[in-house]
Length: 185
Image 1: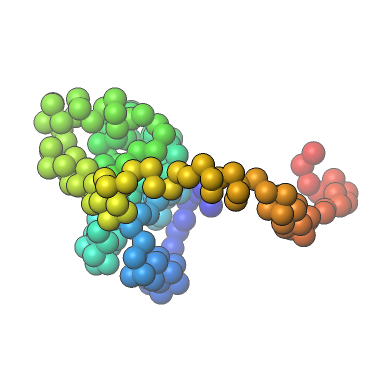
Image 2: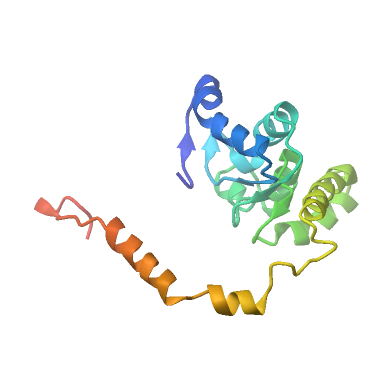
């Protein structure tokens, strides 16, 4: 769960939770997203063990890790980082190659590298991973390949799609009765 603390044995991680991720990467997935939660006291976005030792070292993952929304900033709320600069340094050093939304990387990484608090090689490696994926996807040759006005006009927002979405929503609704005011109002 987001923002949760997870106490879990390494055996359970490796036997139950890791295999689907390993299978996805073995099948060619090139990106992963760090989570908001912590695992055994270490936020996933600050876990060198999870992102570098396991993901890249043991599984030979060649893609990049993106932080979930403000996952780098959340290191402060976890009590794992003192401030934004510390959070950016910890996240990048752990293996979060791209910050999705917080703005910490753009504001803090140049200062951290200039001050010698973060090796340029760590930043270079993160950039290399992102560029590797962009090249693998052909985004240098054709960056707008998925944009097609005709396809959009003929395939997006169709009544059949709305009908299917409405049907899925109707079938997934769960009605609850709040007997004896058990649920919060």
